[in-house]
Length: 171
Image (cartoon, rainbow, N blue to C red; front, side):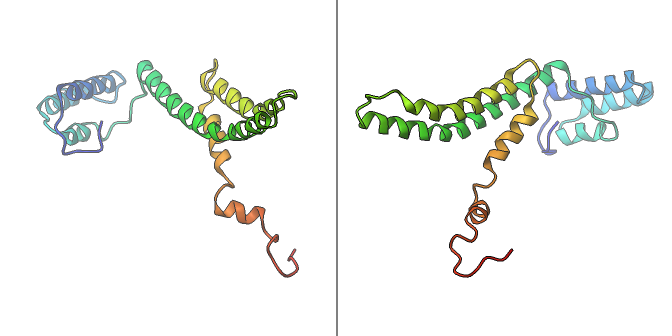
């Protein structure tokens, strides 16, 4: 329901809590007497915290197919935005190479196209993982997180270790 117990409950909140109690009753977790007592409490509740306490001792129900699809779509949209944001920086070398190619007369073959290969492969592979027949959202998230590693201060220190040292390196 909500993390805010002092928020007033709506009719839709009460109906959802009642439906969940009925599903627990159908699964055999509640007796008929417990169900009726809890339903009275649900329909008399005015705050979300009261609704949460009514079912606090019951396990969470699995999401409905519609809720799962909505959750999947929301997560895909979030990952797609992260993917495009992260891939945007990968197109910078292509833009720089194209500017160099144009400023040098643009008479030779379009060699900056080679700078497009890595970002197109990265975006294409991850878009397939996001929207393909079997979405692999965890894998896309891992790819995006992996791309950020090593770019911070610690990563620069690791890459340049020893290049500015004055004495012999320790091994």
